[in-house]
Length: 74
Image (cartoon, rainbow, N blue to C red; front, side, top):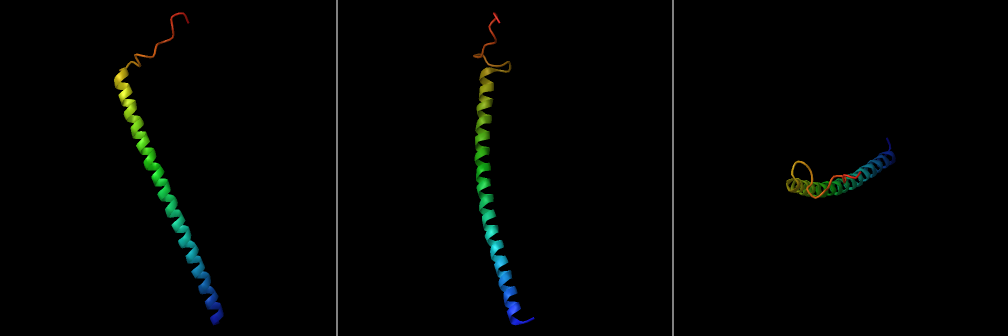
């Protein structure tokens, strides 16, 4: 191999490594963003579950006291 071929192969390899590092950094940021979304959704879900349990305690096992069945004239 001539020196010129070795150099161009080395430059190509350096470029590939650089591109892979950039892609890895972008993917790492993306994973961090997704993780933040999952954490926020988990918090919201836990809050909704607490609210649901509280509503179930207030209404009892048979349903809601405040929600009426269909009127008898139906």
